[in-house]
Image 1 (cartoon, rainbow, N blue to C red):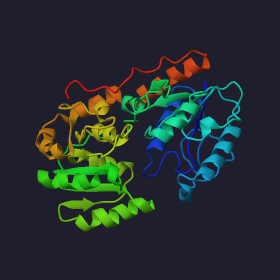
Image 2 (cartoon, rainbow, N blue to C red):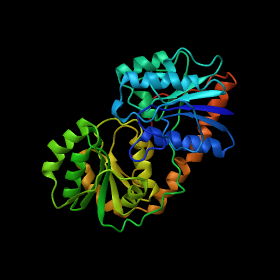
Image 3 (cartoon, helix red, strand yellow):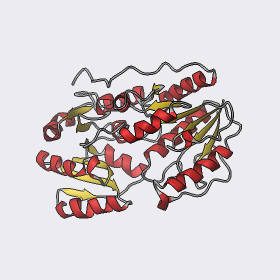
Length: 353
């Protein structure tokens, strides 16, 4: 089939550094092409994903991150270039609400953010004319009145991810510089566990810089090593050398791509029991989940987990191939006019928790 993909205007595909949505779209585009499908990608013009790009798109608009005008202009250009596709999978918020779409072409959209009240209102409107995809059952459960066509967990290309030995003797944290991601808590956990902590964070937006300068930087000491934002190669080396990956998130994160990245390097995850974490971490087998104040106590047990099991779990449940196949199955249903089967109600709880 000929598949149209749409991303936002603010980060190229694939991202050079941080960019979860764009990383997922890049994996999908490459996977569809490898499976023999034709892919047309509406993304910033400086994107380097090796599929056909929609002509006439503007370069990455880093400065307009989150701006409505920037997104709307991008969406109009995207849909003008997607006139000859079998299906459109739109990863923007505005795009699925755009009225001037190609006639008769089904549209799917993925919810990449939290389903808070305002977002739920938007997705209820979107669901009238597009198939809504959630990225975890926990995410879908926060707005049970939003019609979700399918839950599809993220996957990743494992071919370039080496399995580390965990011999670095440190814990690590990778994420954004903000309270929700749990960086402050990770520092406390590592100190309580008596372990060195290596920190790699995205710190570009004003709020991210402010949080780091005002909250994190003043408390950094000899127990912490701040390495800044890193590319994929450095990230996987950092994760692979860690005894465990700390993910003490302080919000109901809809998925958490960073957790499967850590597990892919063989590194167990220690995180808070919230959001989609129970759908990703197999408690006692690929990591440990609990309250923030419990996490330091899990470090010795995490160090004893089998790293090969962590990697195998990602291969079995979070591969790019599985994610691509799940999307193609839904696309086929939509193109053939069949009603998607939907999802079970309520978030799952892992049997070991």
